[in-house]
Image 1 (cartoon, one colour):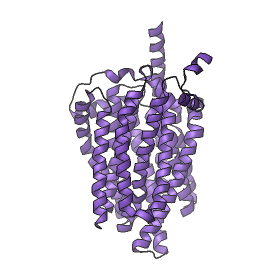
Image 2 (image 1 turned 120 degrees about the vertical axis):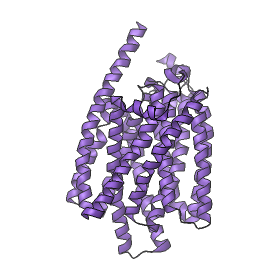
Image 3 (image 1 turned 90 degrees about the horizontal axis):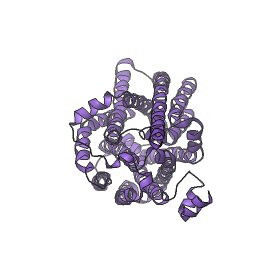
Length: 449
């Protein structure tokens, strides 16, 4: 232990108190931590103003329909992603693709800032675009992390890297809340674009800093180009990836439905206060800034104090059962007590667990699979299937409201039932992940013998 301690840098000595880290891993871990911090800071500046923009211009139903449109756009983007990924994946610098994507989205943000400056109504289109941005860029960043690190190193270091994202999300939501009155929507967008450019430039150093002993074994494997639809068909033929896809569809459906229920409460409350125009948007911005700040704060505390312990106690595979269990309890509770304050706080708890325990677990589920599945499979799952849950949710809201005059109670009941189905799928994922872990363990042991 003393010999190992002498090899540690000052930074690694400090980090070793938080996670199990090996000599040489400190620089890369810190860079990934910082990059994800900046990326999430940039995203949450936009997320806070997203809902107030669309709800001040339209209704909660329009918000749900806009969410559904995102799924259709991501279906169209899936083949483009595959095409460009194959083109860039042959480059030795595996950060090249993610850097190009981040810079592209930063230019998009500048366009929105200019439209906001001239007073254009951008609520619906911005809401749709931000959903695409969040899925593509965040999923791509975690796929990049999985491509940098081996399964063993990633299972140790992802927990700390995710803390950087959690802190960035909290700082971004708090910054958006107090700076909205100072710089407005246009200023927040400009700041977000600048941060995204910085994150893009850092990815090159993130990849180069990973020590060879901790780097993904498959990171140098050549990947042959293939038609985009074959990538999707191939994914669906793999039971493990298909289960993850089904799980993400249900998780996102339930979460989106919960946000729709909350939006109904927010709009009704604002109407009860007789707020209109700027006053209505300011109230909603203040509400969502506080709401998101509580989520990110609790998520950060869970990430720092519980996620590592949960992984140690029950493992990565079993950790995926936590969120469905929490959802079953939450929606059963609010089914009997459907009040504004309770739905707000149950969703804060649900989203905190989702953005900490669930997110870290979900990203870690891709560690034991091939590099191709990490990039193509992960992006198709978290791009198309993640938003396919939104597509279903929007359709259910439209049918329920239009043909059955469904109220909030009906949707709460539906969420409680779906959470149980989600738990059953999560249990099967846990079993398959455990089998793959055992395979890797015995393969490594036999190879060293």
